[in-house]
Amino acid sequence: MKKTLKKIFDMAEKKTNMPDQESTEEQETLTEEQPLNNENDDKISELQAQLDESRNKYLYLFSDFENFKRHAAKERMELIQTAGRDILSSLLPVLDDFDRADKNDSLTEGTALIHQKLVNTLKHKGLVALDTKTGDAFDPDIHEAVAEIPAASDDLKGKIVDILEPGYTLGERIIRFAKVVVGK
Image (cartoon, rainbow, N blue to C red; front, side, top):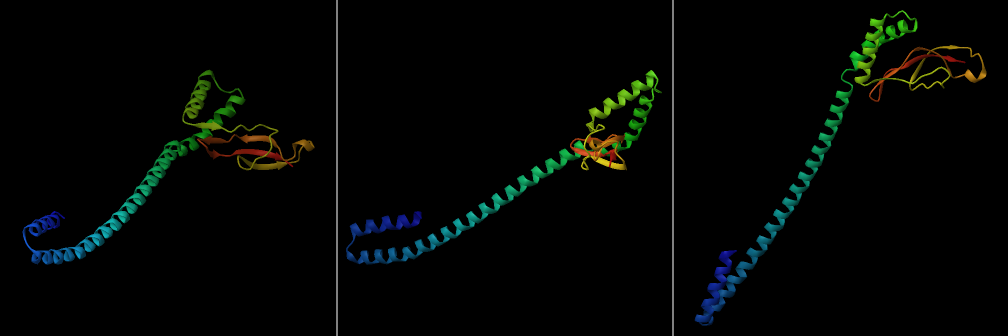
């Protein structure tokens, strides 16, 4: 570009110093430079198109990477929340045995303290007992019907008559359904 401007200035200087013979040379040079400008414009538009394409690819990859990071973070949080699910599930029968012994008043004071400590530890780890009571409506999303017995009255039909094992959730996921007897 600087060379082109220099040529134009040189031609303008020659034109003021020389007769008409030089002005024809100047016109030829200017007409030769016009196709060069068209080539430059074509190259510029081609480079602009490549730049736009590269920018679009970059934005797509950036968006894809952000989605990947969000998804990975979500999976990591779920893994952290449910990391001990297997261990907690295997401790539930021990907790059930403690609860049965507590109902029968066969726990000594020391054993009752151990039971309470186990319950508190499991709660601290995110284990929550499902709130299931006799007389509640049977919900197949949180209850597992182990048996059906004839209901004592019509208002107990389709309702929970007895709870054999309580259900538990860890975080928002059910790790054990409540095992219940339903009236029919």
